[in-house]
Length: 198
Image (cartoon, rainbow, N blue to C red; front, side):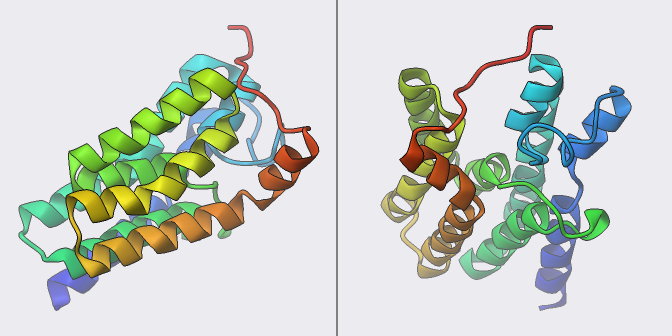
């Protein structure tokens, strides 16, 4: 029980490390919370600084979900604890204690959790994201569609109630965090994927 609690706390703290803010500070870019969409995530970092800082941000945000899950697997914890770890890392990204509880929207961290849970789940979600992004070129829609399908992939590959519940909560929170994007999608004003020239 103590190990499980510690893993969940550490997962939340790791999730609270904002890759976007740190990368922008280190690379001399504006705070992503004050520029573009004001979202500390990879897509907004791309708008501000281009592909390289965005790629680093994407990797950092993904690792925040991946690493705690891999540690949980290494320690042999059960599905209930894995679900708690994944949810804690995701919530840490959304509401980071180190940055005034003002975090990102969570797609990359959720994807890291899914890869860490079981790589075929992550691969399926990533494939959907890439396909939608390639066809429609709208990052938010790619994230929304891929994460809407994610509970089904968890059910298909690892049908444990705590894990399906974890993904349902992650999907619900992610949709909530994207509510402004959903309004823009409905009005036809949502930005398309386009990198700043390096």
